[in-house]
Amino acid sequence: MKWSFYKLSLKNRIQILYVLLTFLCISATGLFSYNFAADVIEENSLKLKQTLLNKSVQALDESMRHMIVSPYSMMMSETYGKVMSDVRNENTEHFYQNLSLLQTPFEQLRQVEPAVESALLVTPVGEFYATKDTVISRGRFNLLYQEELKDDSWNVHWVTGHEDTLFQGEKRVVSLILRPLRNTLNNYSLPGVYLMVNYKEDYIRNVIEQNLIDDQIRLFLLKRDGTPVIPTSYPALDEFKDAPFLKNIGDKDQGAFTYANREDEQLINFSALGVSKDWMLVSVQTKGDLLGPMRQIRWLILVIMIVCMVVALMFSSFLSKLLLKPLHKLYNLMLRVENNDLEVRFESKYEDEVGVIGLRFNRMLAQIENLIEEIKISEEEKLKFEIKALQAQINPHFLYNTLNTILWKSESGRSEQVGEMIVSLSLLFRLGLNNGHEITTLRQELDHAEQYMLLQQQCYDNLFTYSLQVPDDPGLLQAPVLKILLQPLVENSILHGFKDMDEPGHIIIEALRAGDSLELRVKDNGRGMDADKLNSQVKQQFEGHSSYALYNIFSRLQLNYGDRASLRFLSVPQVETMVVITIPLH
Image 1 (cartoon, helix red, strand yellow):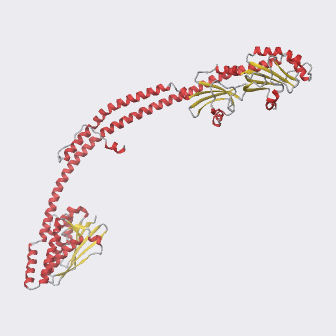
Image 2 (tube, one colour):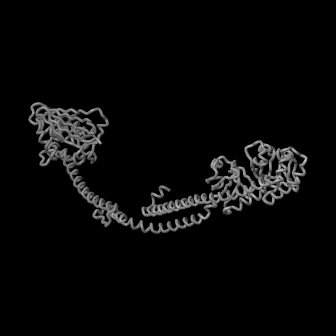
């Protein structure tokens, strides 16, 4: 995919990137707007539900307070007082009489509070209840609630929804257990006396569900440990008893939070009841249900994205064409330059990056034309100097002397020396021609100079001796150098340096590495030269030169190496004269 993208045209890449950028911008804006709206709706929904839930708790508290007040009103009756008097006096003789007397308060309790299913008054002298109700067995109350009765800290105790285990019928009830008020019966304490009132579970469920905010919200009456007080018409969440869920509630009286289960995120509101702090009303709404209307907004955002992408795709073609028009013009000019048309020039009314590139393109073409002209002149100069160097090598005077010497030695019967001279002359020409290449190796250049000196020794007996001083460095001997650099210098030493000398001269050729450069030194003990004048002519690039051989060497060095090469002269007449050539090794 990556390489396929690189193979696309610039126009197509601009179109793709433009569409992608449009898509990303619209997507980011749409998602941000959607998430922001969803968060606002969620926050406002939690606040609204908390307000309504608090009102529902107030209504439920009011109903449950009335359920507590009604039994206490019964305890204030004269009949109840007579029964408690017999209980205090442990008088069991009037049990059935008291049972008959209590039928009226029991009936009045049911009339005042229609939610009452049954009532049971437990005393040390016996249990009292409405005779139309049938108890399962006597003494069952103390057996079932012995743990709760051990706790003396409460006067009112609610028991969560359950099947009635005291009266026959197995009806589901919520039980209220009351201890007598301490200001009753002249403040006498009556241990072992309890009034238990069973309220219909359906009644409390209806009180809860009639306060539902809407059908998407479920209300649960729970204990703080997550146990349902009464079952509802819809299943409770399994997470009600989970530690993370209960941790969000803690010991707070009310609050709201978001809880994620296996299916969806749930929006939870809770509020504790006033009549029983251990009970709380919890509302649950699925986040998906709350944000259901937002689905239309999502589809709207999707439609807008598609429309914008189509418009962006259509507009990107026009935009890329407009932006790339100067670039296409520049491209066409480059094609013409590729076909060797260097007269073209780029023109644009824009001063942007492409316009700057076009100006640089024009400048580059002008420089190319100048360079072509300079290279043409340089090549012509190099060819001219190379031809002249070869002409210097086959100087007619040198060739005449050599051939004349060969003839004379041949007639004198010195066939061995004749053979050596012919071999040297052959090697001299072969190394000088170098298969038509301008560059040779240091080893071949030294061999070329040595063959020339061997021939000159044969032509001029006892005129000079020579020596080659080269370090044992195979890499240095293979270094590339210009051909025919040393021979003209050796020729100057023989023809001019040793002229009119009484004793034989001596030529030394040295080659050594000097850092990243190669130094070639040609020394002789001849009559010398004006070194300062020649060094000055080198600095002025031999303007009005008087030595053709030196000018030829210097010009070839400049043409091939530029300022990286140098030519220097040192001279002490009759002692030592030295020419130093420095050329780069790389």
